Length: 432
Ligand SMILES: Cc1cc2nc3c(=O)[nH]c(=O)nc-3n(C[C@H](O)[C@H](O)[C@H](O)COP(=O)(O)OP(=O)(O)OC[C@H]3O[C@@H](n4cnc5c(N)ncnc54)[C@H](O)[C@@H]3O)c2cc1C
Image 1: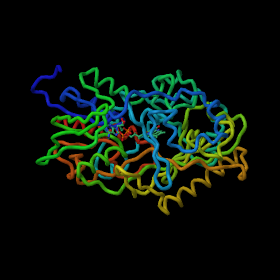
Image 2: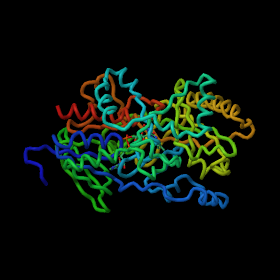
Image 3: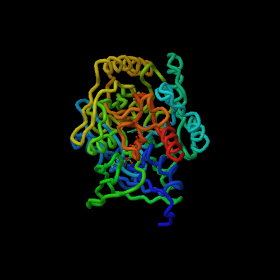
Image 4: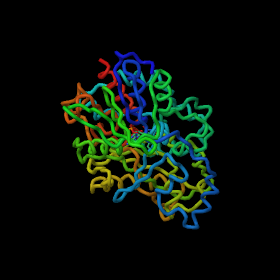
């Protein structure tokens, strides 16, 4: 160890959007130890067409099996949704499609000003819309159609190291094979280069709390029970991981889980080759949801309605800002669409059906994807009372939460950039 005895110590749990940013920002003022449940990220490396041939055999009958093909993708189920998260270095950012959208409206309403951290992020991250140079004619045509329908599509700002290097494989959400897509592993590398210690394969199970402070972090590291200690603990195990650790430690969380449900409306359009396009090339912001072209791998492999060649499928994603009702515990995810969620989703489906109709897919050939979600958060929401401290009063003094768990409500939008900005602000607050 090369830290001085005066240097304070911190443990950061998780390496996704919140965790990697916290580790990078705290290393220096603190000697940081990062505890990460998973290991290195391995992108999907199989031939999709060959695997698709096996669909007829009925081999793919449960979405949870995706882990056999993509070990870092953990799929669980609630009553009516398939839930997706990333476990391993980079967290869920490795499965992201690289969208870099600022969506801090709900935080602003609480009086939390993120202008400064956002400015720093825009100055330091490779955010670009240059991927448009690679768009196919079909994607440009779809963009034009969205415009004519008054849906006001915007080219999606993307976290891409060098857009020119994108090989348009369409694999963004199953692991960029050429390292063009940026994810938070880069921040972890920076933290480690600056002296942080990274411990992988280390699943945090609970916290020891005495006298209003966390005195130890309980974990299983490569099968063995371990206790880690530090002056400061930052919990960033994600919207599904953090609430379970808090509950195990006897810290109450609320039943205010949101997940941003996703439903794709699709249909056959021979030769469209949407599968060979960057995912979500543009986004149309609607009231309470977004619409965007998206090839849904879970539906393609596990939903019987999708049994056709991927290259012939046109698919539009609806991502909904859902009501904050539901919870996760160590046993199960309790989350269902509310009547209002369902009504708003149905309205969005009608818009997508119209888009597909204009593209040449008749109504009776259109089909839906599997309802899924991958933006969990909200079970320890920040309130106006905590706008300066950014620290919930239910937490011990030396414990911070800095991931999607503290977002006040569903944004129905890609949250990585906002979570990183918030984590940056929290790190600044801790340092000062
Ligand atoms: C397919 C898909 C595509 C997406 N695309 C986008 C996109 O383009 N843009 C965007 O903004 N958002 C996107 N998202 C959402 C985004 O990736 C997440 O909302 C975001 O990463 C959440 O950040 P987080 O820090 O809360 O948690 P995560 O990024 O999930 O990080 C949690 C970390 O904690 C670790 N962990 C979990 N439990 C434990 C434990 N017990 N002990 C130790 N470590 C633990 C995990 O391994 C992980 O490293 C996408 C999500 C999915 C599923």
